[in-house]
Length: 546
Image 1: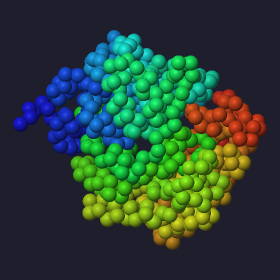
Image 2: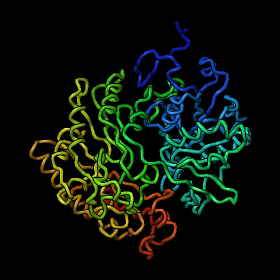
Image 3: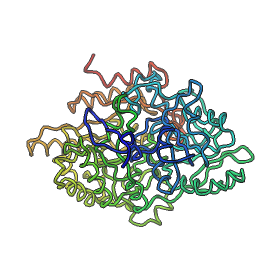
Image 4: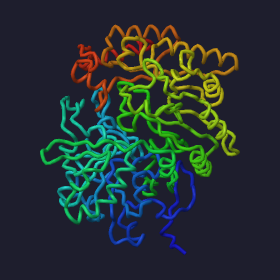
């Protein structure tokens, strides 16, 4: 029988869930290492986020994948980089390597607004507290580790490293920066979703460490490294994960809970948003110019099996605080599950960024019936009262101008899966701006809104479409924003869901912003750059407040 000190009560919103052994989580303290009977660890993952053992958090996923392979893995979440660096020393030298990630977000997006004002909160920290990670933690953490453990390899991963793997424009410093490998001094960088490369790296690292020859790993797919000539080399990626491979990742024994260490520090907002949600696929073929999802997760949809998803539904409904509501059953876009090429060989030759802009590719399967069947199956679960679709819907996949219009899916979602508001993202009203964004014409949003309103009227429902728009995107002028304000006003909107364009690494929109040139037409393009220009564009949304 385990001693009582091995057990913790998981508290979430004053709910006593159940007693669990601390060994259900990956260890984050020296004491937890000792309770497992370990004398050392193989791999230490250093993260800018608090440790939440949930498949929506990359640190937990990579940790669990390595654990499955038999490695002794410890997590070092949000270490103090300002004191005597004791946090970085507490596990000692790992047998294989340190893994370093900034967390689920690029740290600069996490820290600053589009106006470069410092945020006073951090959704990935208990009690929403700011200040528990530095700017560019990937660089800061790595430099500290190299100072303390100069002979131990450091492998970078996560969104910050992935999108900064090559020379890139940094909005916050307003200049072009070298690869984060050069800045940090790390040995290797894993880009994209890292389960496959990290397993191969761990498998081969023992010999590399013994022989002090990290170069022996330079042929691993989906990594970047610095060669002898000091030029950054980026290897081609692994093939997209198969359904069996992605199922194996999501079927690992996550507690779905923050580490008990945080019980007294307050809730973690990012976790609260997804605690009862289920991710059903990865990737996005939308190809929006301002979005980096495809640069990290890939363009090809990697779908979980229905069986794996239903298994996770069982895990969710057994959570003590579950009240019958699945908050989301989606992914980067809600309605791309199981939508892949009709003929894969055609896709392999294609260089287009988007499969649905300016029109839907004839080789793309956009059948919503499997997704509709999944929703209906989950909704029939005896412990599920309602399934909400919280991810954004791509209405251009099933409206009347689509290759294969699917109003059955649209009607089901609007009737059964909306909590009063349905999120969609037209992004702008002016078609020349939408062309730069690689988004469909605004008339298609108007058509969908008309369908939505008519259906609600017929069914006696009082629901709203909440459209998302962007100000100050390259190609957008103040005149365009005034036109947006006028058109949305005629549709009855007083806009609230708005954002100012923020240039982030590796997007076409950021390239336009940094260069002032459209990369495909080679023509000059207007960009709102000064705080006053950006303020005036953003204020156009709020005509009703003046």
